[in-house]
Length: 147
Image (tube, rainbow, N blue to C red; front, side, top):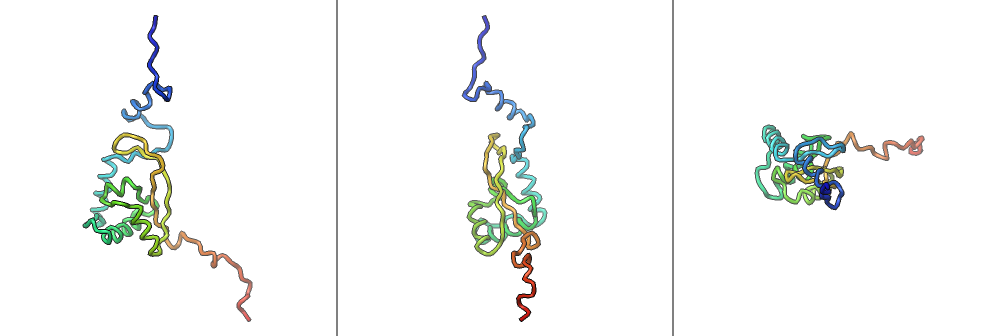
């Protein structure tokens, strides 16, 4: 008589998390945002004189804007920002938006330093002037102002 395999609530017998912790590549596009990745990002920023020098709100806003410019389309997500010393990064992004900067917020799933999947983490990307299409520039006014 065989003993049935114990199943968890998901019906996968805990195998999913064991494989995940063992580094098996996932089928979906979930970004690994662990300690190694964040350390490399912090080192890259510091090597380009973009490391955070103070925890003050003003220093965070000023430095974060430069970091977003440097990173371009890569942007920075909430966990990366926290790992680089930015606290309340969503507040800093909002302050930059209020200053007139156009920052896109995308949602992504990540595997954090804790080994768990975190869905809906924000990734912030600064849009350049060339990326923003002015509705005024797209209008063909047909000489309306020639009067």
